[in-house]
Amino acid sequence: MGEKLPEMTAFKSEEPCSRYLVPILRGNHFALVHVGKLEEIYHMHVFDSLRPTHPNSSPFISKSELNKLANLLAGKDVNTKITRVPEEHASARVDTIKKRCSLVSRHVDGKISKRAVLRQSTTAQSIIDFKNNVVPRIRNQYAPDHIFNVDQTGIVLEETTKRTLAKRGTDKVFRVCQRDNPTRHSMTFNPCISADGKLTGKLFVTLYEPKPPRSFRQMVAPFTDLHVTHSTSGIMTTRLAEEWMEKCLLPSIPDRSVLLLDSWHGFDKMKVLRAVARKNLEIVTFPPRTTGQLQPLDLFFNRQLKCFLRKLQDEIRLKHNDFTISVRNNLLKVARFTQNQFQAPRFAPMIQRGFYELGIVTTRPTFDTPAEFCFDPEVGKEKCKTCTNLSFFKCAHCEETYCIKCTIDHFH
Ligand SMILES: [Zn+2]
Ligand SMILES: [Zn+2]
Image 1: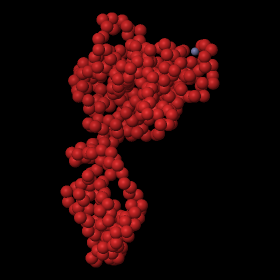
Image 2: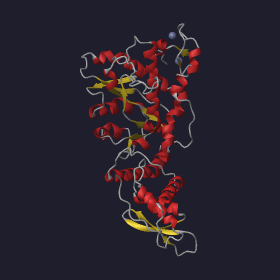
Image 3: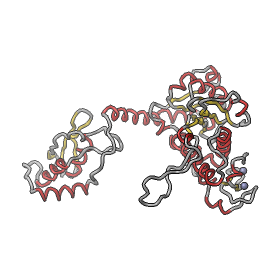
Image 4: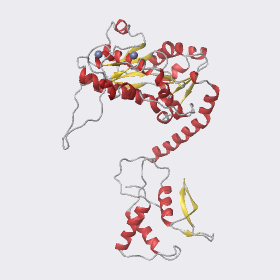
């Protein structure tokens, strides 16, 4: 059950107009507020009295509360004593009020503590502060090709689409995957994007290796466009963060740049490395719990990356099943191929989109997403450039079309 609402009383305003003064809970105290119609009073009363609320939560409104309002509305003058109305009239009025105020009975999806609610309002405030103070400074101080955002994003080893068609009434629906275990483990990519729309430097990949082979270095050596490391969980560690900064990021960005990073504690040691100071790199950290609303990678890029991988892997399972997605060599082939396609100049506006949402880029970029462009179903009518199969993929660099078997090794 929700919280008990304070008693509602409406007073006629001193002003000679049809407005009413109602007590509204503001923080810890009541304030008298002028409002118009009675429905509006009720609406404000109910909604304000439970503030701050979770953005998706609906305040608790009981039927008896609505009845109270219905009774209140029955009186011509709200200052006069409320006349009770018969039950059936009251319920008809309740329906009218519900309709007018767009109120419906809802199943409650979750519970949220008062503390979490308060934390959310401080998070919302820090988002506003960041956008008002930090973003304009970065925009004025740095050129777009000097503004970078990097984060780690988990990539499931074998990714599958989450929906499928099934016969109505089917009890449970299963999707066939190549291997079961890889659908439960992830590796980590650290893409680095810039505000001028580039995917910069080598892609830093942390593979999931519970028992890494001795010859790991030699095995990954052919992938010169990737910087490949490993951990037992497939998640980046503090030590790997330092390796990434020194060997991967710093060599590929210009001096006097700015790097936007999330507040993950694993980055702390890396931020104070001497090499960072030598490069005059400013590191701006997003306030805790705000990356979903502020970080350019989260705002657009990462979703495109995952969508691209899912579509690619679906086609591999369908038409190229002897290519086992989750073995080390193939994971790296797919990573290299994906990075190479995303680096195509035509996707620069797509990369800029997250920076636009943050407010660093000011004109709205327009584009086809990589999955839309590369895996356009129309491509399926064309023959593959190198064999006789039908195509599946259109290269974002040369615009030639290829079948899935020839796709993975196509590289610019
Ligand atoms: Zn082919
Ligand atoms: Zn090409």
